[in-house]
Length: 428
Ligand SMILES: O=C(O)C(=O)C[C@]1(C(=O)O)C=C[C@@H](O)C=C1
Image (cartoon, rainbow, N blue to C red; front, top):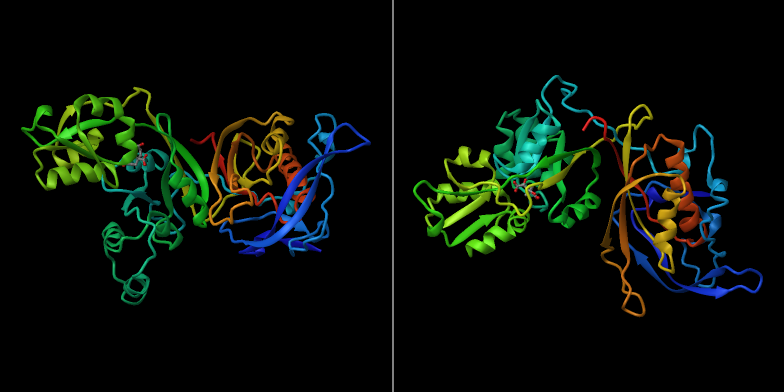
């Protein structure tokens, strides 16, 4: 009987000890799975693979032995491959392609929320991805929305037309909640920077929200040191900015000996400096922020590397179906049962099919009981690869991944995969 993982919001799983045991009959180690104490895994990860319960064991049967885990073979990997036209029912759902700059169905402009105030880099990213969009500034906090009923009352009952950004800011609605609650059509989320690396908090946010990646955009980020008119560099004692921006300007700020203070976004820093007419405090922000808030540019291009690029993801409520007519990129997230070479074997399913990986990131899996030895963590692996989910090759790779780690080891729905996005490179 097939059980859909997606249907389970909290998946009961079991703690297992994997031991490698040399088998007398062949030279390759065989892995046996020994179940120990049961525990509950509560994950908010959207899962869309299905698992055959005949394989055993999401029920926590403590004596069940799992079959041997086979190593991925470079000779017989084709045995996992199918050429059928419709294998998708076994696989993570294919998601999204992009709807760039198209008006929404009612003819109005696409509303794209970004975190921060006017002049933030995220605003430029929104405008780059969707040139005719209405970019909507939004609060960053991921807090629960306390005024939902009030907003519903205003919008639905009184049909009040109020400036959207004012409402979003007033209500402290988070960026991603704004999309989820249909106030905007897209959200822009910085995910990675060429100097600072991955923006981990935003990786975690991807899993906490029911949104799909529908595109990405890369933006050259050129930071300026801004101050009020008449203020000189020597007058400055502190500097305000977003933590990522402060980190990207580490060398310059260290040379200047400025005390760094983190705020929610770069443009917000510029706004604070201007509105409070601060004389001993500067801001690291864009030249656009300088002109919006009437600040002077004391220094340009102060980032540690002149090629400073941030990659932003575009998120939407609805996925769109990937095709094979253009190049696609797919993002998946999964976790692995630990054991020798587990990650190597997982990644081999892509290498075997000449599928190029463009990014791998790991994050600790939260709310997990610690393993007995206390030295192992569980991880979520985020992998981006260059293929479309409509491509048979990509489907086979994910099937292979599933066979290796779901059917054999897991009795318990591992990998807790999979796709939360497919995005279209060609249009970016
Ligand atoms: O503060 C801003 O202006 C942002 O858009 C945020 C952000 C980020 O989170 O990385 C975006 C681009 C730059 O890397 C610095 C800051």
